[in-house]
Image 1 (tube, one colour):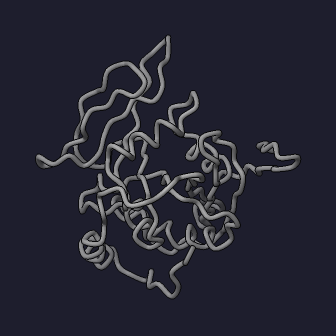
Image 2 (cartoon, rainbow, N blue to C red):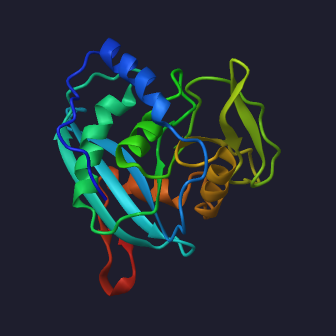
Amino acid sequence: MKIPQNLNWNLTPKEASTQQSELVQRVRAQDDFGAVNFVAGVDVGFEQKNQIARAAVVVLALPSLEPIASAIARRPVTFPYVPGLLAYRELPVILDAFEKLEREPDLLIMDGHGYAHPRRFGIACHLGVLLDKPTIGCAKSILVGHAEMPENRVGAWTPLMDKGEIIGAALRTKLNAKRVTNPIYVSIGHRISLETAIDFVLRCCKGYRVPETTRYAHLVAGGAVLSFQNSAPRVL
């Protein structure tokens, strides 16, 4: 996997917004990939009072959903927290983690939005375009738009709408006997259709609200260590 080098992340929020509006033209919303045997989850945590970003990439085998490889990277945070500009805060360290990854994934699931973004270019789109990989955005809350609550059954979904356009889906991934579990919000990142993105997210779910890709990446980004000894991955 080719990791882009010498990218300029030293932008103002206004410059970053302008760049997003330009790069969105490179997003492809159609399925453009072959067999998917390995899927990666991506997430970022923070250390030292949010001064250091810690990115985690965890690769899982399909269909078993067993983690087979992971990589982490740390980097000082240089971009402020600005809603809609998460990519400029987190992508530099995410790319560092991908450089360390020993197993190349066929598909990426990002903990964050893709097309479901004010400029239709969230962090999942940005990562997918930079790596030229099929990428899905999978978030726990809405950044922009609105959606009706899907039926209370796994796999049910309703369109996430903004300005008359379908920008993603509110997807039911888990049932709870005591209370209704909130849906997650799926959108395309790059080289994939919304229907296929929904299918892959469901295939990656295993009893939790979030897919296993996101769950493992979140654990590792938060400081957990995966052990692959004896071919049996464990969270230490």
